Structure formats: C-alpha cells, structure tokens
Length: 470
Image (tube, rainbow, N blue to C red):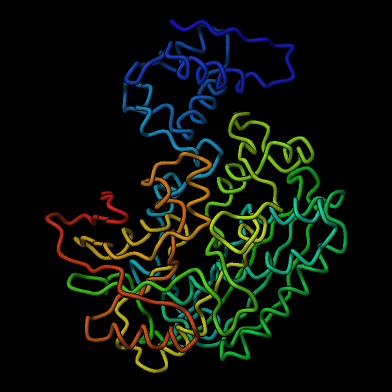
C-alpha cells in the first residue's frame, strides 16, 4: 500500500498533492524505475479519496513521463531516460494522446495528407476540394508578453501575428495549396494584462504581413476575426488563426507520394530571405515552452507569475541563465530577439516552385509539431535518413546547453536548422535549391529515403558525430 500525507486544508488541490508526493518519491529514489504502483482503486481506498481524483493525478504523472500505464497492471515508474522536460511542462512533442483519438476519425478524401481535405462543400464542384486548417503562435506569445511588460513596446506583437498565420499557411503548402487563401484570427486575452494597444499591434501585424505576402504572389486575404476577453482562462494572450482554401483535386500532394529512393532537400530556418526584413534565428513557433523556461532567468517568474502554470514543478519554471537583453552566444542577436524571431514562411518559394514544376515535388513536410520526426507520419515502410543537416543554429545550441536536454529530444521539439522538407527525385534537387536560392533561402540535400524492413516508418539522424534512431 502507499499512504500519502494529504492536507485537506491546504490551498494546493488534493490531486496536485498526490502528483507532487509521488513525483518527489521518484526523484529521491524511494520509488525506482519499474516499480509498480498500487491500483487506482487501492490508492483511493487507502487514502479515502475518490477514484477519479487519483486517476487524474496519475494521468498527469504519465504525461510528465515519470509513470507509464500498463494494460491491466496499472502504472509503473518509467525509466529516467524516458522523462521529457517538454512533457513535464504540460506540452507533448508528438501529441501521441491526441493522435490516438483523431486517427480514428474520418481522414477526409485523401488519406495520409498533411491537412484534412474534404469535398468542395463550399462550391459544390466535384473536381475541387476544400481544406481548412487551424493553428496558432503557441506560447511564443508569452515571450512577447514578457518583452512588452519589460519595455512597453507593443509592436513586438507584430511578429506574433506572423507566427500564427505562418503556422497555418505553411501547413497548407504541404498539400500543394497555391490558390486563394482566406485567413481569420482569434485573439484570446486577459484584458487586465493585455490592453487595447496589444490588440491593435496584433491586427496591424496581421494586415501588414498579409499585404507583404500578396506582393510576393501569395494570394492570401483577411477574413476578419474575433477578440475574446477570456479572463483568468489565460493570464496573458493567445493568438490563433484559421485558414481555408479551395483547390483542384488533381493538384493535391499527399503523404502517400513519399516513398523510397527520394532525395530530401531541407530549406534553412535561419538567415534573411529577400522577402524578410531581418535575419531569422530559426526558432519558429515550436518548442517555445521549453525555450523560454530553459533560457530565461527565474526573475521573470517572480515578476510575472501570470505567465506560467503554477502546477509545473518549480525547478522547471524560468530556470535559465539569461535576461531577454543578454547577447545570444555566437550570434549578433540578443536572447530576446532570437526567441522572438518571427516564424519564417516558405510560401513565396513554394509558390514559385509549384508554378515552375509541380510534378517535381513528391512530398512536402513542414517540420512543426514533432520537428525532425514529423516525416514519420507520411509514407509507408520508409526509412528516412537525414545525414547531412545544416549546422545547428546558435539559438538551439544555447537552449540545449542551458537545459542539458538530450539530442534525441531536441530533434523532436526543435527544427534544429531547417523547417521545411521537399521530397523529390535526385534529378530535381538542384532545381529546388536554385528556386530557394533565388529568394536567398539556403537549401541543401539533407538526406534521402530508402526501404525499411517493415511496413512501419523509421528515421535515422546523423549529425555532429551522433547517430539517433526513431
């Protein structure tokens, strides 16, 4: 049995007390890897608790990767190697629990596509299809919030507006969308902390970015949006967008086209493209929960407690060595500039590549959620070999140095140097590189595909003398 020391009069919820005490027992070695916990029913009975309270606590520990659920045998303590700093902060790198749900839903008229595609319900054209996509800037908006609170400069939210748009737009690129796109924004804010000038900057940033994209041939337009005052649902601000487009079915690029004997061309996430106003650190909009906590000093937790979840273990909250204004090692950027660098869109490059030779592209993967492992969701029986990656950008080197995160997790959370992959025949590699280069976007063949020994997919990353298998 496991007797817990619970205090009903404490301000800390009982389920959180359970989480903290079991996690502490694991950290101190009282519970060791492989140890089996009592069943939910037994824990509830021993401690006079409701079973659902215990279940909620154990599920949170599972999400932190300190416990593993075993069929019929309940929960066991996980190996320390499986513990993820990213998950411990309430974020899933691969969203496995989400995919277990949505993978059983209708996948649309094209299976294994980067976005769900439906019949043309908007126009009723049997030769066309609809695609709608929703995403946002994630917790990067919190770093903008910290900068705003420190400086009073609301224009920092222009970049957050771009982040939210790009996370939709560049996913649409992966299925070959190259026509009209309408995008709508939703801003959820705590009005006490984010006044009207923040909203004005977000709207202004959206309109400005869309206008710039149109100048480069990307046919994208604003469909309005919504600003919601959500009170204590968020302490700061969350910026999301939704994009919709209609395209010809014959133009759709599906993940099933990614097979063996293809070259993988990576488009760099760093540098300054011809359609960009400043050099990009490469950070994108993934992994910012870890980036901000592992890079920024604890003083930000003390000044802005509304910017983090009090349920996260204290040693994982703003535990880094830097201020926003500190120089980023091996870079001309400050830490704040690097973390807030707007997410690069590859839309002008892909717009031109599709117009020039659509048939040359066998697949496109946006290395967003899941980062370098995103490719594993596409194709069947494919061994992805990435053995000539770009040098790791300074921002990711700094994050890894500050956090001590293992390389295997870094490649699952961060793009590490390229955020878009083009799958093509070897004969088309130079064409892809030349089109990207015409926009001053660095590109190179970073790997290839080959047959795997099973129907499952596999990924091998070879970089800086290290080989990592997924």
